[in-house]
Length: 482
Ligand code: ZN
Ligand code: CU
Image 1 (cartoon, helix red, strand yellow):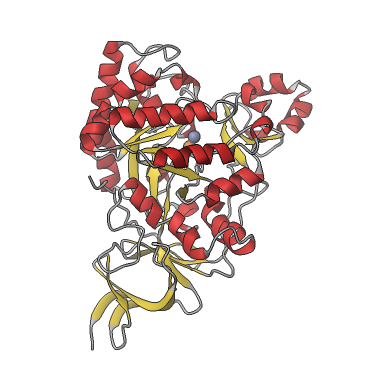
Image 2 (cartoon, rainbow, N blue to C red):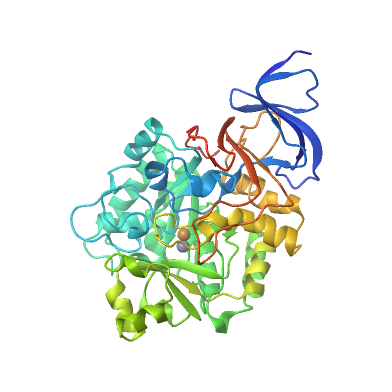
């Protein structure tokens, strides 16, 4: 009787992130941690939240982001906390903000996804980047990775070839610095030009520090189309060489001739999961988004321009329309638009559903927060899984949907006391209305807060309430358990 808490959430239906069935209960929070789950009759708190009719779940972990700079430039993280996200895994697809100091001239794509001016590339080490985020924290937690493409652009005068022994040694020492400073792993993007010339063995040699620090190897694979199985095999091989867990980023099969091949890729992944640690993430849309390149346009049934440095006025428009306005062929229009970003419609809905439903698939947005007309996954991923795929299509039970964005993700990335509602865990909590939750972001109007996300807590502090950010910045850098 008379116990005191900082925060009590009353009358909630709790989905704890482990995939266990939901239960009725109350949650007591003290000093940023959940200290009680159960009945809290008679207890008092500085803040009480009545969650009657709503779900209280662990805060969602965005398994795949490009938020390295967003954490600094938009620390309220509205695109994420409005969806119930409380932790972002950053530095994906080979692209990280550190360690890189940009000189003059254009930023090498795809690093320009983070900043096409170059001004934000000003951290020579991971320690310097972490120091700035420690002094100016964001609303969400973050779990950072080093990008292999960033290392290549930083250490090589010409990225269109394999790295020399000396260049490998420099990249490896920067990777070691980042791991020692607290990165959770390293990502590659061998799909993209600046890393496409890196042979498997170069990657293994650069990644040696992952073995020392038990870091993760996370990859946007070389090929997600006709050679997707070869790419999976390369990923598994790198994981075995290093003795570390691998995570396959935004798993998909792109291009019409490959539609349906997720049956084969998932069977292949399941087979290797039996012998080595493997994880994967996916976003709930059948259109992809990245930089604009002519070679990708041909594989898609429709292409939307998301940003263009020389022609910002065409953001959000169909490439065919842009070409017509310019009075040019699509190929010539692409050349005029560069550097630019695009959305490509090139996946099959059945593949997306099959991958999303796969037992070990985590939810990750792959949102591109600096695009002027971003893919709607930036603001819509998590509510779309909970609303469209779980409630409306019945792809899986709500407990499974929540697990794919909480407990499974924390376990895959090794983030202790996150992704679960239980006594002792950190108080990252999202309260949402299971009947109303839905994405509001669309391809036509992509920057919109989701419906049905009520209140979101990070380390016990509300960061999103009453449909807006609260201004609190309780986010921390998360450390991987080893
Ligand atoms: Zn990627
Ligand atoms: Cu990505």
